Length: 314
Image (cartoon, rainbow, N blue to C red):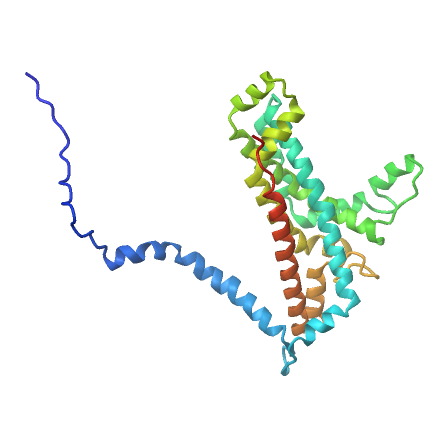
């Protein structure tokens, strides 16, 4: 005769019994775990943001008086041709760098997900090289490649009968130069994000689609893109935020806050820095920061709603 040992069970609570009350420490513990993030965000994010809105209402001299002028800085902003030029440059560079980057990264990730390559891990890791490369080193290399007299690109264009282009001194040329730098830096990182998400999709879905006669393009359109919707939304929003705040690349290319004699590539962040820390007009600089903040919110929100319209087809 064998005896079966069973794990003792806790007695069931009688019906109608009052629930066990948690101690104060148990109720506070979850909030204590997340408190460091909100504390750091308040100190280094929320407070500076609110202070920027406050300073924008003043004629703020860092070593003099602070005169309240209300919306005077914003009125001046709307009448300043330099601000609109910087806003146009910012949006132009952002579009030229972000849209091709995301499209090419999505296509390459789809190819890498289906291709059978030797040393696949090596090639995937090599995509992070542009991301970890110094921005200053990148600027030096691309400035030489796009140089008017000795640049590799102008040398290649010469074979097509196209005269040398002064990329740094022209509006569209400088925009293309900076956009290529930004796209080259973030292209590999974005590709790996898409590739990691594609590898989470069961292979059986693609195999079933292939059996039903769906080619690579139809699989990409009807399976890959809808399945990547959360990642696409993430990359679109983050690229919008980062692209509209571009500062380092145009500064290193032009080596001046005005970004050229006619401000051909001066972005809003460069214009903000010029007015705030170059001219010491802190109130006007803060107003530029508020305008940039509103612009980022509007465009990021628009991109979010456009990205969320990607739905899997049933």
